[in-house]
Amino acid sequence: MPRAKEQIPIFILGGLLIVYGLIVQTGALLPTMKYLHTHKSMDLQVTLSFIIGAIALFGALVNSFKEPGDSLFDRFFLQPVGGIVMILIMAMAIRWYLEPLVKIMSKALLPVLGFKIYKVLNLNYVVLGILAGVLLTNTYGIPKFAASGVKCARFVLKMGVIMLGARYSLAELAKLGVYSVWLIGFFVLGTVFLVLWLGYLFKQPKSMTGVLSAGMGVCGVSATVAVAPVVKAKSTEMAYTIGTILSFGIICMFIFPTIGKMVDMNPVQFGAWAGTGILNSAQVAAAALAFNAVDIKTLKVAEIFNITRVLFLPIIVLVLAAWFGKESGQKLSFKTVVIDKFPIFILGFLLLFAMSSLGLFSPPSHYKGKFIDVSYNDRTQITSEEWDTLDKAMKEGKFSELNADQMAAVENLIEQRQIAGDYKDRNNKKEFDRVGRARMVQLESVLAAVKAKQITLPKDVKSAIKHAVKQVHKKSKTVVTLTDCMIWFFAFGLIGLGMQITKKSITQAGGWPIVIGGISGVTKAVLSFLVVLWLVKDVVLH
Image (cartoon, rainbow, N blue to C red; front, top):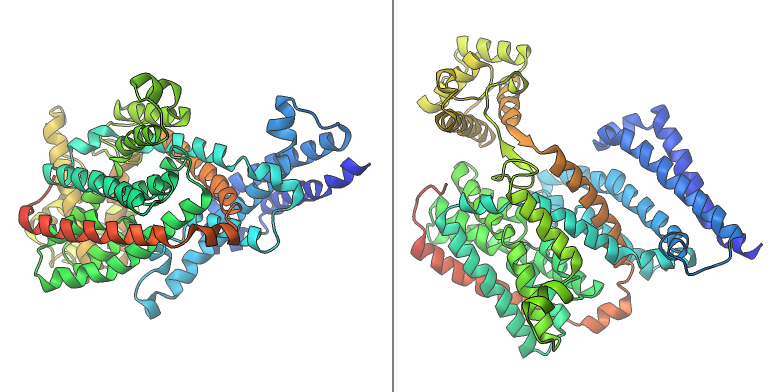
């Protein structure tokens, strides 16, 4: 049976998954999982292993006896099943083993390097997945049984982009301050159009300049992934864009704090500059902390500007969709852009974004499904043990280094056993929420002061305060579920795209993405530096 022989690799993969699921179920790998901090996903690992393993065995069995056909069942399941299973196994290995190991090694190297290489190089499942795909295709090659499944990568990636829409809210923009919206809006759009112009000047493919403009203008990897299908970018073009963004960000992470100190920028100015000029979120945070590890204002302002830039993603998607349609020689109208030629998956992204903005998943002011809830209820209380710890520490004078506002917040935390407004104002929701949030900010400043070694608190006291702050930072279960789906879609899609990046395609791409990215990045960094010094003063942005 020649067809049965071809299915042997899929039978083996399916069997290995079932065996792995059984081993995890026994708890034999629990010590390893705890070391890797993946033990909370133990049930998910068992479930996915059994489901994917069963699918692999079923698909291989049917393929062994059924003649090849052209039905939907053949095209969307039987033909790609081998590749789908192989990529899913790689995604599981990266999510549950490789990424945690990289994090652990990064922390171990912290005393030597002075920074976490995992965060600086953004070595998460996205980059690791692409690298894994590139390594496989350029060494062993894509196995014959998996070739059809690899072609599913772009479709799966589009599903991930749809899920991405649920993480952002239009209402969040209104809360981020006039400076951040106008500055970021100007530089996001300016950078996008500058890259498009440079691409035209250097005669680069429209797909390359389109995806690079989004990556350099908006928010790096997320924007690259979201826009790539819109402008029909190749996997090599995505890889070059991500590489350019990360490389430029690493350089900026070291240069920005040095320049900021040389010109005596205040915390708000540097935070605004870093949040505008650096794309990767981890690199923005690293630069802000390198400039000022004591005053939390620097980091807070940098993240405000960073978040604002991310929230421009839906606008840029629409702009680039219209631009690509025009550059492709189409006569543009609302019908051609939105109805006929506009990618359906982006409509799905915008639909989830609109639903999120209307507050259907969580309060409309949320960002990535996270919001603050200082309402008075039993679920947000600290434990009895934590209350005893704080009460004892107060009586023993452990909080003597706190300022008056910080002390008042801690005293109220002990009195109410949670972060909330004044109980007497509970019917006045606006005032109750304002007071509760103000107390949360003070407690966060206590934790920041401890981290910066400005003050000293016992470990259990710090832990109790940290838990109290964590209790009021809520996550929408719906958005968390959609985000989990998005992560797996991206993991699958980017591994598959990585498998399409060959040595030949890399050589053909040349170094133009780096040149264009460098010019646009430096231009934005310099201009934003001048504008920030001119416009932004030492004020608190709300």
